[in-house]
Image (cartoon, rainbow, N blue to C red):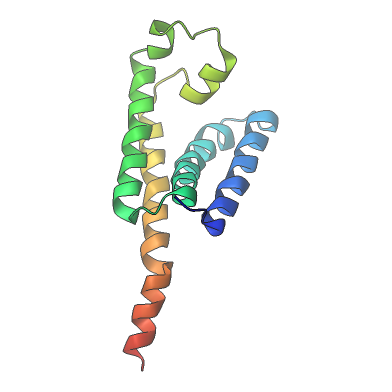
Length: 132
């Protein structure tokens, strides 16, 4: 286990943005959609902050985890666990299923994969070797 400062900084920044959205934004676009878009990026960066993991398996794992959380909302798992009165559980797990959230999670992970495969330091190394 290690600490990758770049991912840690990005994760921390996104966490702050997510908290600010949760506390101060009460609209029908930023809070539900941008928040969901950012949360998968936050989880991905958090994992990459402490674990040396490959891009694709990590991204797909985060996406599947996000889908699982969303599907748990469809089946009202929070109620079945007796956590319906826990504000923290309701914030973390969510309470209402929406297909659009699955699309938003997918878009967030697609951005992660695009950035990682396009701007990764290994890509730069491969390109600089080709130009020599």
